[in-house]
Image 1 (tube, rainbow, N blue to C red):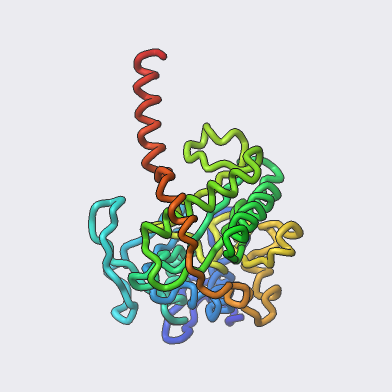
Image 2 (image 1 turned 90 degrees about the vertical axis):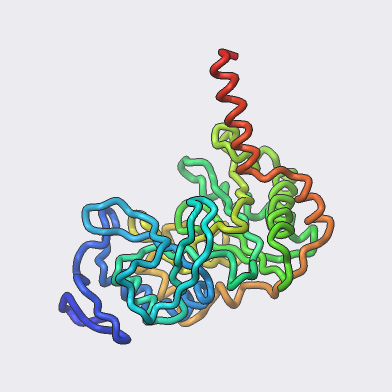
Length: 319
């Protein structure tokens, strides 16, 4: 831990206002964020290296905001990449966090959450399912059950994944894919895994993108492909108590809660290990039948957009 003063320098990065509260409900200071990120940096940075980075920052008295563009005042030594952002129809210059110094700079900017691209360079690296339970007490237990469905669906196709808490109320499943996997085929396979998991227990899990259609079930979000991001393992979240997204062994998944892992508890639980890297399977080739089925499944966002237009039209007609 650093000295008691409000400013210090680490790795050439000036750190300021360290004793300020981090955000309302955090019950933590900016110093605690910096110390946490510094403590886990040798595990977090590898998850960010070579990837366009978006962060969620908090400023005193302001709501959190996502920052994609690297600010013009950023030091020249921070690496960056420029990509076309389809959502905003413009080019965005993203930071790339490849080292401790860059991570510390972002920590001093009060960047709490770290959301890397799913591409390392121009290569997609993982098939990812984001399991989003309904907003109710005990919902994490439902997300755990859904994660086990996903694992069963993966294993039925000879695939293995790693699992982590999202740091919120859900669960993320990551399956590393072999180099050369095409983006469209990866997106298709992700849809197929979700559909197969849903078929295993349709009373528990759903692929319905429109929230009102989920009926209190866990949403198997297969849209985390292409230009999407997913919060990195070990990243804090802007939530009360500052929980972190934390790797969990499959056998332990039903024994934990998201609140077990915070910026205060996580370093001690790691005890020098890197369970995310250690538990990640080797890259795997996606089975052809999985890809083929996925190409028959409509893209959820597009399907939801068309359905929304149909429902709006029916509402206007009064039917």
